[in-house]
Picture 1: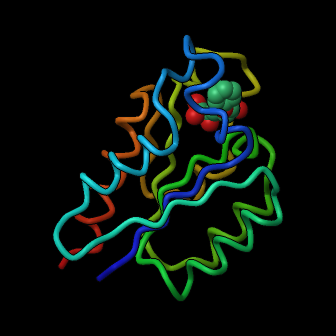
Picture 2: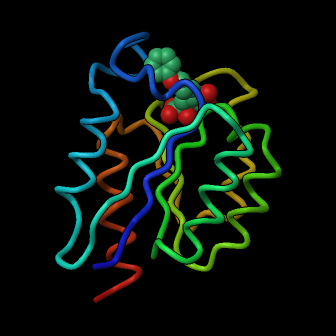
Length: 144
Ligand code: CA2
């Protein structure tokens, strides 16, 4: 079984409980279920969430030996974190960057992503469907 790491950054533990007009009503449990349903045969999901930059870096390091690809929504660290970019650059498999909201229709500071420099694909504004699409893409890229 190949494992895809679905990694969520700061404040995304609040998904479904605050600001539904921006982030919708679904929770992280719904994200996990949507990703699992999107997996091709022979793939499974491991979901993680952290509010701490260093812990996200360590989760990416751990994925080097345990995951075939990473779906990442780094939350606000998307726009600030060279450390997370560096960790992703040390990971060999495909990386798909996901944003629930359309960051390009929001404040200017959300328009730049450090992670996009490493990502094999970027999805924004599809709500939690973006995670499922990213999961499908990783299955395609990794193959059987
Ligand atoms: O649109 C996205 O997925 C974001 O990555 C979400 C981040 C934001 O900083 C990025 O610019 C775009 C914020 C995540 C906060 O998540 C919450 C979810 C529900 C309630 C409150 C915060």
